Image 1: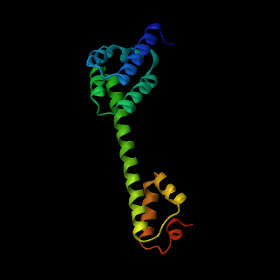
Image 2: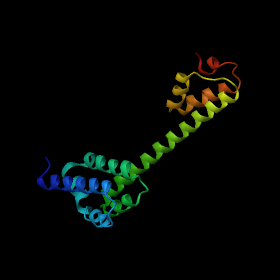
Image 3: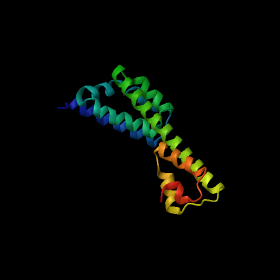
Image 4: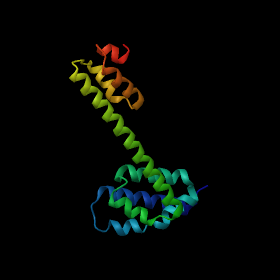
Length: 155
């Protein structure tokens, strides 16, 4: 069970992060530096899953390459720093995967357009929303020689 110290640490981290999100204040760096022991307190009193949620929020809202994230990361103890780095790398990998899928989808749609194989709006949306790179590549390969849109997508 979490102690009052754990709850106070969690509240102060939350207040500070919300303040940073809403304000462009030169004193933010000092406020963030004061969080150093609080992240470790949350880890001790609540466990890694709660700290992971906080760190995921930080990376998602501020971006892994933001100056604020660098300042926050500089305040972490070893366990929190390792968790943060794992979360940031995971989010970067997800972004790369999403970007590759989006690129494949756009290439497929351009190829279909170039070949005058025009997909319906619903089919176009299906292509854009597909995140399966192997499926997008399969459709692209079929679009190279297909005579109809239906042949590309097995309709």
